[in-house]
Length: 256
Image 1 (cartoon, rainbow, N blue to C red):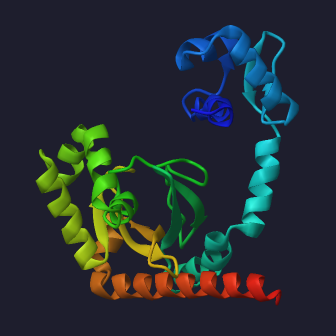
Image 2 (cartoon, one colour; image 1 turned 60 degrees about the horizontal axis):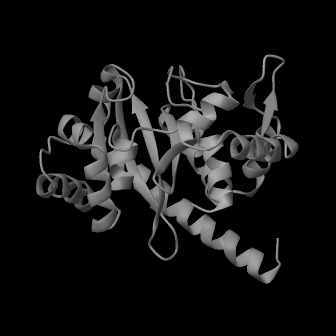
């Protein structure tokens, strides 16, 4: 790891379950010396990424809020995707969600509430488990074999529990079936009782970027023509891909 990676690793310590750390706890968790840890803390604090409490502990700072505002204006996936999921939600009355992949993380970037918006646990900014839920599965299913191998080795229990795969060949076969179908369906894997349906979103060079997902109650699921809803999601995904391509072209040519 280089210095930047080591500094950013401190930010990776913060999760929804653990939002406050002392310097000593950081050093112990990451295996850094105390002088090195304090040096990284000073750099992060000076940039506004973390703030110090009077008791010597640290939490995330206001720079994160500033960046969140900026990314809402600049992320092509979000800029192109937000009007699409709004249209889909108005058309179907269902909740629509955008999940985005970066590195080995999948994060909720937007949730569009439908009629009687559902209490969904994984709201904006919260990373999803890599193999739980329709959104994660449909994204992971598009990844190359080498990445799938690493994911299987890192999460063998989830591969067994949520994909019914006890070895890598079975794991890849389950994901290949999702990839071929072009969508994934899950039940109760993120929020008990709810069903999820997701389709992937690709960049112009056919790299998976994220997905559109919808969440339904069991009652609504039974009353919905699922193949028709899947087609609507696929059309929405294609609109997002086209929108991102248009945004990239306008930025290249300098046209608004």
